[in-house]
Image (cartoon, rainbow, N blue to C red; front, top):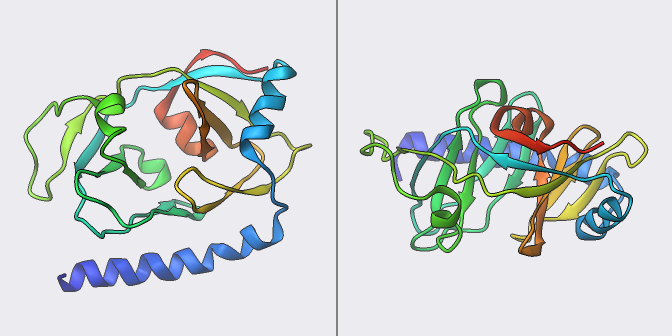
Length: 191
């Protein structure tokens, strides 16, 4: 590991632990139950990720800390396994945040590279635009903490989107409001 990687790893860890405080104050809720309730109340819509991303193969054991500009740490991945991918959104307003996508899910979500890899190993990918159920966290619901499908605690705040893969209700997680606005297209608006 080079000095730059160590610096950014230490910086990310510091930001991660600094970002944990709000999670401790927010009540714990079950995001899958909230989605089920939102569907029953007809408060959901359909959206799909459409904005191109940069992606590179993850290094086995690598941990990706997702940092949203102006908010801090959103989540921290489990250590990457062989075949996993690091996906970087192209949203300067959110800090071009990165996420770890498991090997089994990556081809279904992003398909084939649209460009050769750059010097850092990133290639251009076009999301396949799978439709996702979503609802926007309301002021009434307020901020809450939940356990993401990858086992990490996340905080959802009013204005954020909770999205769900229709074929796997357990695959339900938060998209920060700014990231959702930047990377998703609304197919059917939530009320």
